Image 1 (cartoon, rainbow, N blue to C red):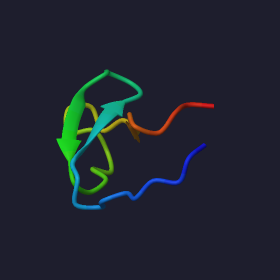
Image 2: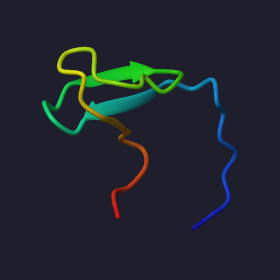
Image 3: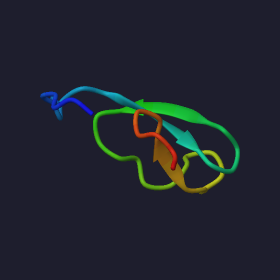
Image 4: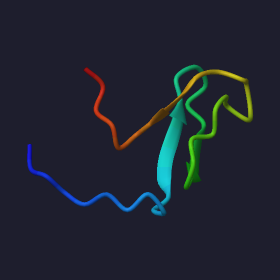
Length: 47
């Protein structure tokens, strides 16, 4: 993996594990606004 500069002011897409809702935010949204499920940053790969 290459080192990159990450600008924390950039908006990131977050997706709900339960219902699939996607929101774009500059800060982690916490729970899903639609179903209160857990959100994940789509820029971070699942492993």
